Image (cartoon, rainbow, N blue to C red; front, side, top):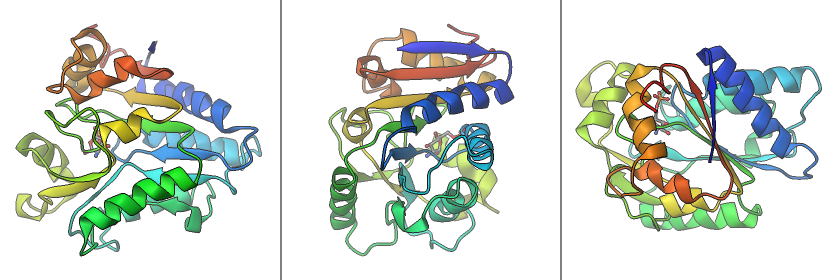
Length: 241
Ligand code: GLP
């Protein structure tokens, strides 16, 4: 595990984006794993700048989002379908037909989860997985006590996660209660993972992920076993290391 501590969030975005770009360049059909949330926004903005400058071409790339809310229409502005389109597919000039998000509207969520795993495999597996971390240590929507071997599956969201995400909705009762997420096993299959975290509210989870025991109470701690993982932090998120 490589840990890089930057002076501020803007620098985190640049450093992390350069790591992602390095691993995507030169591949005919690169596959990028996409996180939502506020953490990777600066990373995506810097990737978009590289694309605009002609330093990176993602027109042939495949993208797979980590997760999606269950029961939230794809047209809802806070659905991850909409968020990924707005923050990734359009600014990075990716082919929308090659960018997939788990289908949280499917009548058969188990079938949708299996199809998602098959689509990732068919694309050749994820070259670089972008990750954020929840304040309780979740990655994707793999909440504490998720099996380390899990594949894409439906999960109930914890109260802490629903509270953290309530800012994106008008009221608490509109915050979805479940999600469809890639599993920890799916995430661990990525060839490279780049996790970004900023702000003091992430400091406890970051310290537990990096220096704590590998335990299902702290899902992100499984990354200690990832063969090529890079954690890019600002000073506030690194404060408890
Ligand atoms: C969300 C997403 C995660 C994200 C995390 C942190 O609920 N499902 O993929 O990493 O929570 O979000 P943020 O970056 O906004 O703090």
